[in-house]
Amino acid sequence: MIAAVCSWHEQHDKAVRELQKRLSGTEEMIVAAPALIEAYAVLTRLPAPHRISPAEALTLLETNFFRGAKIATLDAARYRSLLRSSPDTGIAGGRVYDAVIAACARKAKVRTLLTFNETHFASLGGPNLEIVVPRG
Image 1: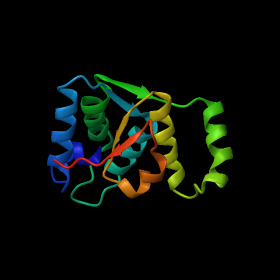
Image 2 (image 1 turned 180 degrees about the horizontal axis):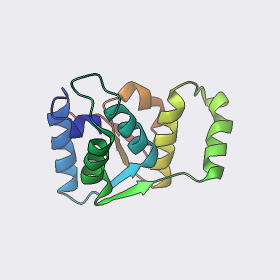
Image 3 (image 1 turned 45 degrees about the vertical axis):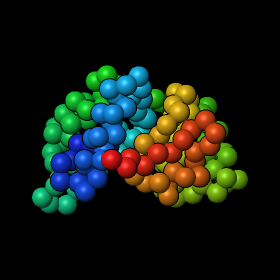
C-alpha cells in the first residue's frame, strides 16, 4: 500500500502497474482493515522528507483504497481463534499482524494477497490464498 501511494518508493511503479492490471480486469479490490491502519501509521511516521500529515495520509488511503474497495475485518471470535492457534503455528511478535491480514483475506474469500513482504506472508498462504509479489 505504501509503495502504491508514494511515488518516491522504489517499488512504486511495480505496485501501481499490478493494481491497475488487476483492477482493469474482473478482479475486485478487497483490503484488510488492519492493513489500512498499518499504512496510516507508516505514512505518518516516515522519516523526513517522506513523512506526511495525518490528513494527507487519510486522503491518500481514502482515494486509493477506501473508494471502490471492500474492507475485510475479523469479528471477536476470529481474533480469539487466531490468537489461540498462534502458539501452535509458531506465530509470534510482529508476525501476528501479518496473520491478522491473511485471516481477513481468507474470511473475505480473497484468492490473491499482494505484498512486497513475501517472507512475512509466505507461510500464511495456502491452497486458497496465493501470496503474490508484484513483478511489474
